[in-house]
Length: 485
Image (cartoon, rainbow, N blue to C red):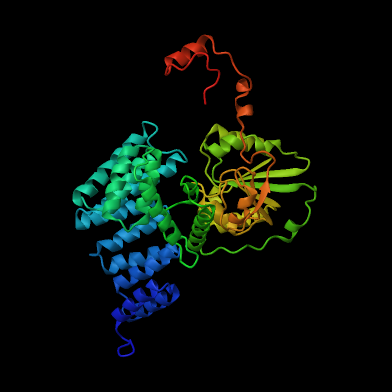
């Protein structure tokens, strides 16, 4: 560059070297200088888009990948990368169109078929909510379409490790465990350097109680987790072990579980632009006029979901003379009886799903702060589909923020004041493995609403008559067994 400062390729190569060293901002500046010299350089646009994608700036990444496609339409990788950024934003129809255009222009492409199948399933998952697909007849049409695409991908390139890996994802999520293990095994053979694929294989084998080679597999998994969660390393784009999965692996240490949660939260907040606390209204730190404590429950699971079912009567059970209860919902109305019951029984129910879709987590946090919540309870933690809840909590819309119910491990950050748990789930000796203070319930933190939901089962019921006949018809259960779990 000193000898020839007008050479764009030199700046591009410098950017790649700086990125390898973790000097992301310097790499971005090198790419911007490259593009000043050659504005139509598609590879440079794609490289800058990759930096934006890694940093969670998805709209900027999308714009740069679109420029890369415009200037270098012959490069299939630019289109695949554009599709993945659209996928990350939940723009599945636009993503599908990118792959269809790629296949029409360039012919069969294994990754295009694979990503199209994954996009189809992700879009369908949004429509069915929390439940896994493959459980009702109407799911089969989508699974058949996805299966056809995956099979085209493997026919195009039988050694495509990513194709086998994502085919395994579909089988795992639809509870076809043997087929999932088959494809994950092949994927891990083809891509031995990709931690997420190997971890998916180990995780799925647990469901099949397949302990063959477990000690060796677990030792390798431990090394991967330790490398990915090292405090001096940037978080990977895809963490091979998720916080909620970590409790399944034994003997994964409590300290390593904390590192997994901390790394996951750090990655999530980086992708969200490292959200900062929002200014709280002055009146929020003052006693309410009616002298009640204002408690808010935040969740994206006010729907047909285990947390909604267990907690459905809790909100109405507060003493309204002392506590104002508000449910802040980040999910659309699924029409379920559990959501309807919670909405009807809670003192206040505020639907913030549209706010989240239009303005993001910052807009949700501002709405909650403006509603004067003295205490905000996170009901989700690191569970599926609740990353937005974590980002909202990171904005600290309430002076006191508590984790409860959905997840018993540490959040690893996001400005939670305390974790509502019990001495069995979170023994005092393990307090150092939580970033939050532990707030102990007297018996258990886990709410169970079955006594109200099924009052007829409060006492043992004699098994006679129709019940006895029914048990004999289904599986020949012992007729004298008073209760089946």
